[in-house]
Length: 607
Image (cartoon, rainbow, N blue to C red; front, top):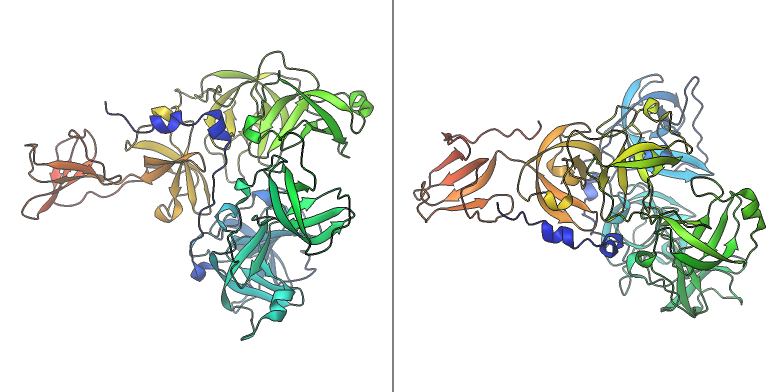
């Protein structure tokens, strides 16, 4: 059998490569026509309570704000500026008034979230009654280099500056200072403009915009070195509080100098060193002093549970535990609860700046968190590479924690695995209903099976039951061979498909517009996305091959895969082919049955 072409890709995924985040975010597609027009931003608008409704079905972080994901809801109340829609989330959606009449209170409506944020600690979601033409942007698709032009639409003009909708779930802002210096026609709500994203704060989702490009591109967050020894020239933006300053180091996000040993003035140029990078929020902590020894990078941190690290206690947070600096670009937490918790007395006895020996017992790629223990594990923890995500190998699991979307399980690996909770509309594949998870505790040990493993994010998904047959390893997936898959997530411009491999795949949503969660679809792996750790898929067409030349295999005929352009060395055994004869005629040939037809066979992608 021919080589499938993915083995070389799989072999590149050593642990170091798996921990490496992709170098650059993709450029944003210019789609000003799909940006939703928004009314003047509301201040202090508070949704009314709904009698008898228990909120929390959809946590705010789980609400998909791509403008195309539909939620069913009911009109709860009207206000002067619009209507509040209960669509089953922890907060109600707001439907702004427009030229169209608002649906009456009590009416059932389908809504599409287009924006979300937090104000005064409470969640806010704006919704529309119609989907956008294209999905709105997700975070990594927003170029924050300061030189890429982004189409936008003015959403609000006020004393605090201009708010602009650039197609993300939150509005970007142009500062009052820049607007004061601007000449030309006045910007009005609804005006379409081109802007440049000069800074993005992932933790607050704050987007700082400018009407003018920067003189040089900003450095991507992933490319900034946090070893405590690499110098960066920065400029003080403003003080935050005593001895804490916001600093522009020409990165896509600003950093914070903490514990400054002198007063720093706005606009002052300083040399700083990055000593902390938060992989989840992209927050950077800077220092005016160079470290004596380089900090360990994330990919070099040994999380085997048995390698000792010497560090010192830097703080004891109010939620319990102690943070320890053990010489890495992230600090670790000695927890006061969970599977690795220290006793309250042990935490109480720790003092700030006390030297401690710790062991890294958990390293979570997605959140960038490190969990520590004062004691080594009985045996080394499994690396991501060692975890068999074949769906049939049992692991001893124990409950570690949970949130609104998953239950987290310690199963002897360097990071916790997760058991997905079923969504309100029903479960797909390995998602679990509440009754399935009810008996899980931190004291009880139970069997779990790894079914998905992302080689880039390090995320491992588990099942409480073994699969009917072993799941395919990454190197076993064959290029250009069709697989029956199941759609398990649809959001932004992605359709995620599980096709029986521990590494799942992604279809471009604009090529699979009819698919939704739970649909069965026939797919072809055509490549691998090294940035996201998923196979690139195409929905199978009935006509997969192109035959040119004579209708017989006499040496002058070529057979080419229509998906990849690769020539076949022998006659394929499956699929239809488009046959082009020397005289220009075209007919269709079933490679498996020998059937021929002058009519192109109808596509049947959805199974």
